[in-house]
Image (cartoon, rainbow, N blue to C red):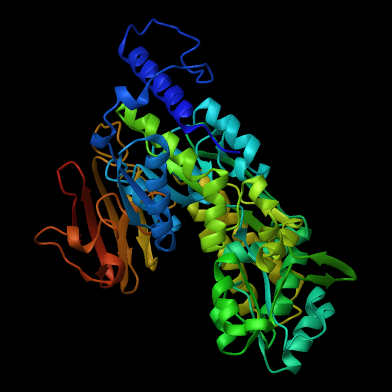
Length: 551
């Protein structure tokens, strides 16, 4: 469907300006039509707005910079506008962390992965999509991508892809009987006989390890409020079904053919099978050529029952940062709608092989004939749409695979697996019960006993602020540490384990004030010798200061 961009711009500009007037006028005004942008508008965007004065920064993955630049130029041409665009290479995973670190300095429009949606909403880094555009998004994209862009019933982003999941790439010169790809035991035997390996990142990555738990019907669903704050969860990983899933995983991770990898580059060594996604299609194709095969994941059998491996299905999304200028806000939403429409999604598939969320592009012959997207579609029957999770959940869950591998047997005892799942449960219970979703968190090497002035601090969250402030990141905190072995630590924003509010590696060594003890470590950690220390964090000034004094 070809969108009438001039008409859409007129509607958006009228609504944004009306909302600005209402917001700045009498607070008692109650115009129920102010949030309805579906009315006919005659705003003349060509004569009323000098678009050459509008500057918009767009973040996208490096591979998409050239195409995105071209698409933005096409937007200007189609609308008779002369907006100044700056396109910068920032990956979908990095974009959310960078936006949360400093929303003001972040891009106006940015690509991001769907699992970051709640964090971005909570940080005030996303504008809710206008009602007319929300209707368009819902009608033109698949249901999973719409759900991925939604928080508490409201759409906050524009779907770009429906290809963020994993499936099987395999070497047809090694796997000559496709039936072995259907059963884990047979697959292990065939790969072992060929002297090859199976690459599946299970022992340090919960995103992949979830395949076994979804296979047996386990769920881990987390709920948020309207602000994106996590408020509760339903989790059945620690259950009889979870024990079965762990047994299935143990058969593979403790076999002689297992390699903990999700890279198609493994084909260049000794892999016969690699579990990865569409982003690795080019690498896999270059490594195997005509011998490249793709299919859905296999099944495993426990106690006579067979379970098909599940997976996550996810999406890339396009977000718009809140704006103070109503005209720029309208153009940002219009541009995001343009970049995510049918034509631009088709171009991304043609140029980058990104799997579209637009239902019309999905139905095209080219998409249907792509073997990687066909495998993704086949696996989608067994996939769970990726919801919103606290970052701490991923760290807690990924430990399961490593713990199962540490047992060293393909047939572990139920009691050993139960112990692993009990540890997992204790970990997720602490995420909500003892960790605030806002504020500073101590992270690093945890060979340390932590306490805060005034009491224990649970998940290392600094809660005893000595300054009255509505901002959870402004204040003075004091806490004591007892280090039992050489250990490093730093302070970061809750939920952003690899970033702080001031620089890319958190408040640490570079923020130590004169007279502090400690030495520089990796990730900007403050590294101290065994002993007892008193730590003070002060973020009330222009630059945060941290002191570490031996007791």
